[in-house]
Image (cartoon, rainbow, N blue to C red; front, side):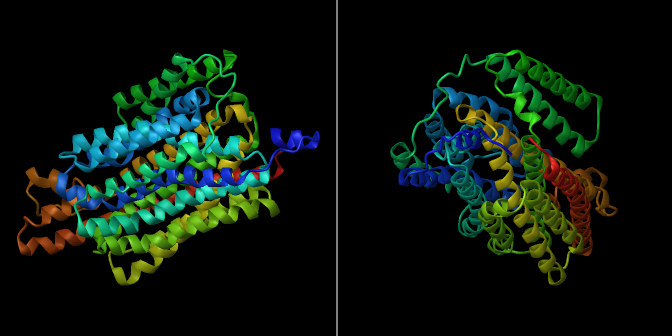
Length: 511
C-alpha cells in the first residue's frame, strides 16, 4: 500500500522520527485504551454476579453488556471529527473525566435500568477516547515503521487490558461487591489526567471546515437502528417493527453517503474506501472483534455457571488467550515486514477460526472441557491480536495526517460495531438455543418464563425447586447452554473464514 508518507519519502522528504517524549506520550495513550479494555472484560466476568444481584431479564442483560458499544459506535465518527477540530488531546482528557464519572455511577447502580443508563454515559465518554488515541498516534509517529510499532503497542495494550481485566475482576468479585469492577477505571483516569497534558502534544486539522451537524445526526441514525434491529431479531425473531427500524437505519445511511459525496469537507472521506487495503482492514477489524466479543460473553458464563469455576479461576482460564492477543499484537509489526498485509490478516483469521472449531469439544464436564476451551480461546486471541494491529495500521496509514481523527474513527467504529454485534448476535443465538433445549416439563407453566430467562436466572430459579427436580433441571440447563455455545462457535468459524478469504485476496490487490 502506498501512503502519503511513503510518497513524501520517494520525493526526498524524509519524515521526522519520533522523540523520547513521543514514546512517553504513547504510554499515556495506551493508558487511555487500557481504561476501555479492562472495563470490557471485567464486565463480561461480572455477568453472573450482576444477574444474581440485579435480576435483569435476558434483553436487559444483553443491553447492559452491549449498549455501551452501540452508543460508542454511533458516536465515534462524530467524535473523531470533533477531535480534528477542537484538538485530539483536549477531547482525550475530557473523555477520561467523563468515563471515570460514568464508571462511578455504574458501580453504585441499584437496578438494571440505572446500570444501562450508566453504560450509555460510558459509551458517550468512550467515543471521545478511542479515535483520539489512534488519531494522536497518526500525528505523533510520522515514520511508517515507527508508526507500525506504535500501533502494535497500542493494540497490545488493548489485549493487555483485556488480560488484566479477568484477573483483577475475579479478585474483586471474590472480595467485594460486583460494582467494584467499575471502580478500577478511576486510578487510570487520574494518572491520565496528571501526565497527559505534559507528554501528549496537541494536534488538530488546521483547515477542518464547518462541523456538519446533519451529517453527525445521519451517522448516528444510520448505525444505531441497524445494530438494534439485528440484536432484537437475533434474540426474538424478525418482525415488521424491526424491519421498519432497520430500513430506517439503511435509509439514513444512504442519505449520509450521498451527503458526504457532495461536501467539500466530508465527515468521512469516502474515497478511502476505494483503497483495497482500507476497506479490507475495516471489514476484518469488525469481524475479528465480532468473534472475540461473542466468545468472551458466553465463555465467562460457561466457565462459572456451567463448569462451576470461581470468578478468579475463570479469569485465569481466560488469561492464556488474552495474553496471546498481547504477544501477537506486538509480533504483527515484524510479520508485516516479511509478508504482505493480506497474507498476515488472512492467516490470523484462519487461526481464530480454528479456535472457534475447538469450542465444539466443550461439554458440561470440567474434566473434558477445560483444555479445549483454553486452546480454542488461545487461538482466537492470537488471531484477533494480529488482525487488530494490521487492520488498524492499514486504516490510519491510508489517511493524511490532518484527517487522522476521522480515519481512526472509521477503524474504531468497525471495532465497536463488531463488539456490539458479537454480543448481540452470538449471545442471542446461544440464548435462543438454550431456551429451546431447556427441559421445563416439570416446571409450572406460569414460571417457565422466569426459569428460561437466562442461564444465571435458571441457576437461581433451581433453588426454589424440590430436590427431586433440581438436579435434572440444572443438568438440562447446562447441556442446553453448551449446545448454544456450539451453534455460536460454528457461526463464528464461518464468519472468520469468509473474512480470511477477503483478506487473502488483498495479496494481489494494487492500490
